[in-house]
Image 1 (cartoon, rainbow, N blue to C red):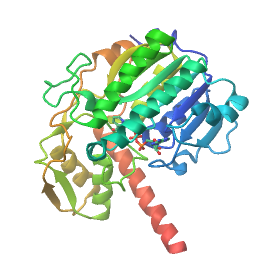
Image 2 (tube, rainbow, N blue to C red; image 1 turned 30 degrees about the horizontal axis):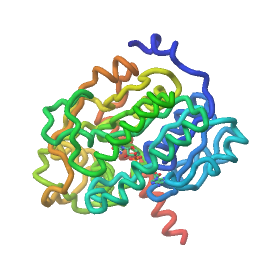
Image 3 (cartoon, rainbow, N blue to C red; image 1 turned 120 degrees about the vertical axis):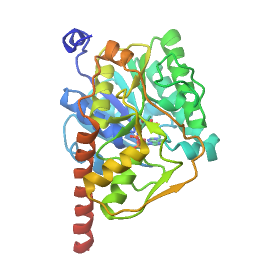
Length: 340
Ligand SMILES: NC(=O)c1ccc[n+]([C@@H]2O[C@H](COP(=O)([O-])OP(=O)(O)OC[C@H]3O[C@@H](n4cnc5c(N)ncnc54)[C@H](O)[C@@H]3O)[C@@H](O)[C@H]2O)c1
């Protein structure tokens, strides 16, 4: 489907609720939704997200931030936003516990936040006439042994509680669509990277951590032998796909992989990062982490057909843009340090 063919599905921008909107992908999606003329309410408990990610939106008449937890009753939480912007029409749902190893250590906590939060949100959607929910699912739903590239029809047999919760979330969406008329699109993201990805966590995305370490000249730790692969997709491409799905009927009631279709090893990423940064960082290896899959790359057919999705930013360009952001952050931190 071409962009022109897709444009006939585009709904009038309305009031969109973005859960987890202070996070990495959520905040870029907020930018895309505002650019498309939406009124946007963000709910985020700031557990891993930052108000700074939304600094560009603060004070806008079409934007509201609410600090709240997704696992609580959302009707009272959203009341002031509904008074201000009208009923919530569409939802982009990102709020989640995102660390796969933490889900292995504490599956009960993972279920409470990820599945409990999704159920809360869908109940809000059902009771308040929300038209559509776009769900941030994950490639972690696939079987570790599934042949690559994975397609949406590949076996889903998650290797972690995190993946189980994402898959169960998709079943909840399907149930609410069939029995309560709430449309959805579940987007199974491959590995997303770009500016605003927090490098400070042990559980963060590999590119953000490696760039941060390379810029600081600190050792880079590769888990396993480095020949494991991932499909890295740039965050603005992902945000664009979410905004398209959220504001139109494109991809209604479908599960869609969002990646690039290009398989890249961690060793290759590391080499490119070292080359781009000119870093002297040492590279070390440690044993594989529980729940991490060996190979990951997607087919692109469904994303192309249903969302007219075509990534615009290639890996080298994306790494260069992310590096510019990491350097900007490092400079800002140094300035803050010397002003204190
Ligand atoms: N980054 C990736 O490569 C990737 C890949 C697949 C799926 N995903 C999914 O995409 C979504 C966004 O991920 P991200 O990388 O931007 O992570 P992130 O940690 O930057 O964003 C998650 C946001 O949710 C918020 N949050 C967490 N628990 C919450 C709660 N109980 N109530 C309210 N807010 C809460 C956090 O504060 C944060 O702002 C997640 O659902 C994640 O599982 C991400």
